[in-house]
Each structure stands twice: as C-alpha cells, then as structure tokens.
Length: 498
Image (cartoon, rainbow, N blue to C red; front, top):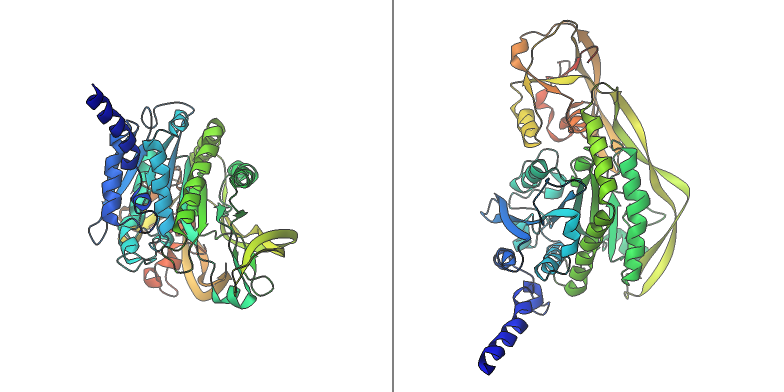
C-alpha cells in the first residue's frame, strides 16, 4: 500500500512538469523550436478534454501550421457565446509572441482558465510563421512579410489565417506581435519607447461606429486598468516619432494588415504589441513572454465579460453589410490629422544608459478623417480573364457568379487618364486618375463574373477593386491589368431598386 501511495504522489508531482512549455523547461534560456512546439501542442489534449489540435496549412519548407481549438461544447452551437481567433508570430523574429501563446495555452492544460469557456470559444494559432521563426527572420521562406499580405493572400501562412476566419466566422480577433523600438531616429533623439505592452484597434473608417466604441472606449480603458493592477507598463499603440521630428500617429488603416482587413467586415479586432529585445532574440525573454501571455488573457477576459454585447453588435454590423436595401458609402482614402489638444505620457529609456523615465508628448495625430468616399454599387463585374483578381476573391471567400444582364442595368466603366502619386500614411502610393463612362450594355457579358455586395466582405471588395482606393489591387498588383487610355477590366454595376 505504501508503495502504491508513493507512486500516486510522485505522479501527481510530475504532471505539472509535463505541461510546462519548452521555454519554461529550459529555464527561459532556449527559445521553443518548431519541433518542440509541435510536440508540445500535440500533447495538450492529454490534459484537457476542452483542447483539440488541428492543422491548417504547410509552409514552403513543409512545416505544418497548427492551430488549437478551445471550447466546452463546440463552435457556433450556443447563443450568447462568441468565437475568438488569436494569431501569434506572423513575423518570425517576434519570438515572445509565440512563447506567450504557449504560456497562455498552458493555463488551459492546467484548467486555470476553463471557466472562460462558458462564454467564449477560441481558435489559436501559436505560430503562424514557423519558417521565419526558425531563421529568426521577419519574413517567411519566400521573403514575404506575412503581416502585410492580408489583401493578396499570396502566401500559405496568410491564407491559412483567412481560411480559419471563414470557417469559424469569429466575432473577435487578436493578433499577437512585438514592436521594435530601437531605431536610429529614436537613438538620436536620446530615448527609446519601452512600454511592455500596447494595444492597437481598427483605424480604418469602414467599421461600424459601435464596434469602434467597444474597442476604443471600453477595451482600451479596461486594458490600462488591468495592466496597472499587474504592474505591467501599458500604453495605447502609436507609431512614428520621435517627437518634434516625425509625426506620431495611430496604427495603419491599410486592409493588407490583418486587424484592418477583418475590421472592415465588422469584427472586434485588436493588435497586441509587446516590446522586442534589442537583439531580436532571447534577451529578456522570460518577462516578454509572460507579458504577452498576460495580454492574451486580458483580451479573452474582456471578451468573456462583454460576450453578449460584442455578439449583438457584430451580428448587427455584419447583417448591415449584407443588406443592399440601404444605401451606404465606403471611405476609399483617409488620413491622420493632429489633435493639438492631445498629450500622451510615454515610458522611455535613455538610449545611452537604459535609464527609465517618462516624457510628455503633445500633438498626437490621433484623428483619422476621410479623404475620398464613394457610394457602393450593386456589384462589380470582373473579367473572367483577370485570374489574379479572381484568385484573391476566392481566397477571401467572396461569392461571385456568371453575369446575367437585366433590364435597366447601368454599367460604369473606368478609363485611365493618367498616373499620379499620393502620400498617405508616410508612404508614396500610386494614384491613377480615371474618367467614368456609363453604358446600358456590356459587350460579351458572358465573359464576366458578377460580385454582388450582399456579403460581409462588401466593404473589403469595394476597397480592393475601386481604382482610386489607397488600398486596392492597383496598389498591390501592378498596372498590367490596365494601360493608359484603356478601360479598367473591372466595372461597377448599378441596378436600380436593388
């Protein structure tokens, strides 16, 4: 009997070691390799019936991209329960995002956070870019920045995220990443910005106002209070600077970034930014990883506490996107403007001796205003020869069908009249100029597909297709689709009374 009891006690003591993450087992001296991560996530279902492991894609280097399902009673089966999609390490040199995701998962293996699953179900990709991680490189094996590939979806990794989105239709999305503050401009300024964690929200104006309020007026104040209680330094995410030299503003509005892309489909979407090590590797990895795990937990707890309201707002917003009875406009271009009354306190360290201090920064570019708006058409007509565009539409789950003309259809065609440039969000963008030609007939209509805007991707489609959009295909796919004084192959379809 004593021998049996001894082994029972011994096995109980050993169980916690089994669900320790690889980083913890190395006493925070070695980063988790791809092989170790795969082994670890595959072991998690052994500890909890609420954890399932699956795969969604393979990389160019033939590494499997795993995802974890956390749910008590399955997905999309219960009222007042929301689904969360969480991604980590899109950029391979942001190692703490992966490590933080694994630490967060460990809390479900140990059943510490099981109660959260009463109101939320979670899809978590702990490592989107395993190839980049193994090289400790931002890019993937194709030298593509995954975090800037959410319009074209040219890579397996970015496409995998969107496949999961259109499989589970999550109401809330979190992207876990790291910020690198140690730039030359800030070094010359004498300081580096070093908050341990930041959150950025959807800045693209094509999101439902009520959802913006959930993020900016509810979640961000919640986060500030949450991290203050945890003794973690927190700030709202800002980019640019240093003060007095370059403008400091909110995050980008571009739909090639994940949270903006999902945001224009009326999703509660947030980016989480830890602060990377100066050497972009293992420096201070224990603290960085634990802060990232705490950040993921904070986001999930907020969604748990506000599940019913988020679900209601998202469902209403997505229903509005599919309702073509109400006229609606889309903002094609937008810009950041200074708020002269704004003052932000920033946590910084001196660049020469790493001494902590606080500075006050005035005149943040915190206001975003429309620069160009357009009414949505009934739909768009895409030439069946435009294989690049059709491929992207398919990857985004956008539905289209053969065009069948109806009486009263008005076809609006764009003719390229010149090329200009546009300076928005600190970048020089190509800005073609067009004239609009209307017609009631289309030559060879059978050679076109019709993309109706009665789907939740309606804002996304308009932003991608319109030639004057700062976010469109003509920004990311070169102008081989149209030559000067020729018509753009994509047409607007106006159908009265529809």
